Amino acid sequence: MNAAVLKRRNYNATVAKIMAIYGKRLTPQDYSELMSRQSVAEAAEYLKKNTHYSDMLSSIDTNTIHRGMLENMLRKNVFETYMRITGFEHISKQEFYNYKIIQMEIDEILRCIRFMNAGSEKMISDVPIYIKGLTSFNLIELAKITNFKELLTFLRKTPYYDVLKTIKLNSDGKADVTKCETALRTYYIERLKNSMNFRKSDADQFISFLETDIDLINVINSYRLTAFFDASADEIEKDMLPSGGRLSPAKQRDIYSAESSEEFIRRFSKTTYGRQMIENGYDVNDLEQSANKLRYKYAKLMLKRSQSAPLSVYSFIFLLEIEVKNIISIIEGIRYGVEPNKIAPLIIT
Image 1 (cartoon, rainbow, N blue to C red):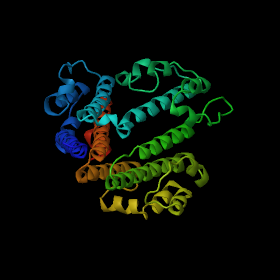
Image 2: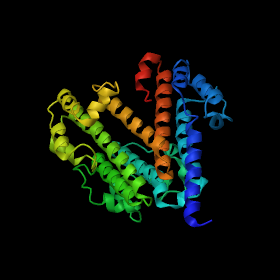
Image 3: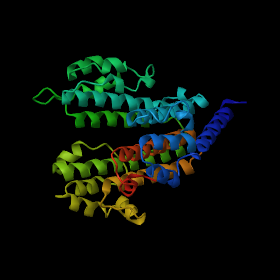
Image 4: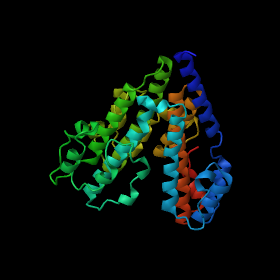
């Protein structure tokens, strides 16, 4: 069998495996059942007996489980699922499929910067040790760093050094975490695009999804800056991710220059994304939740329409992460005695 045929066969097998796993996803009924539980232990027991999380919880006494433990197990399960899928046909040997590890490296670097800025002692117990050996730096050593200069020295042999070395420190010697995040996320996007070694039709579809997703992330972040920090359009633009999506630079500028959160929403409602939210019955006034629902919808469409491994892997893991966020929202609500009708609007489906 020649290489081209084998490659196509492997991709088909990967896509089929993903769809089989996706078919076991939580249903609206599952979410309703979870929200009706009276304790985190009861919610964990439901997950154990009735959902695809049964294997994850098989050796766990749910009577002793606590919220933090369950959340960590859920996040670890996402990563282990990602590793199984990308290892199934050895596609992890291709650069594109390392994207999740890069995401997690960036998340840990940003977590380190936030702890440093807050003057808090970093919790080594919170480090996702299950990715040990897969990262370009030592996670435990990262957790010991106390200032930005140390961080740069630590990262010198990684690509992140060049990304962060131009960040100017504030007068208090701290790095602006927003600027760091924008720089690191921009690096991630460019690296992801440069690693797309697959056919043009798939690359075009992936770029379309990615740029739409970036547009919606920028909308969420710019709305926060307008609503909570009264930021100017110039200030907002500096903190946005680069995108060639459906919001033109002129339209972005128009939205960012809104003088209030109400005006921001009014202007956004007239964009293609705003109209889609309204057409789908989303509450555009709850902009962040509606934007995340639209992100979820686009990911589902890509998974449904795709017959290629890279698009299927990326969209499936994206959807699985949202499912985990839904579960975490529910168990946090249960932990603090929130009524189900107050938790339900937080669930993205």
